Length: 104
Image (cartoon, rainbow, N blue to C red; front, side, top):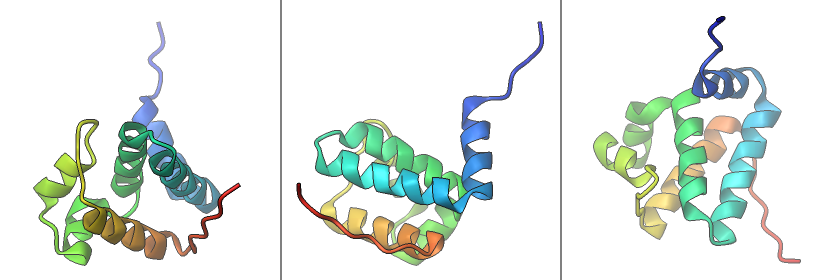
């Protein structure tokens, strides 16, 4: 039986190659947070961080220890609003996108 590529590797490769896909994942993570699905949002953010700047660079740019960031972006993590805002800001800058929110 042929081995298939790991899902995480596939997603990370796509994030690195496709800026539109990466921006769409950030948009989805924000929408999930705002719509009451923080666990899934944190896991998407974790994939974005791993595929883009990495946790060590995120730690430097947010002044939050890397281990704390790992915990915050785990399935059971619990980032504060301040820390979440810092992470969104760094990811926004890294992906070179603006974040606009509207209510329907």
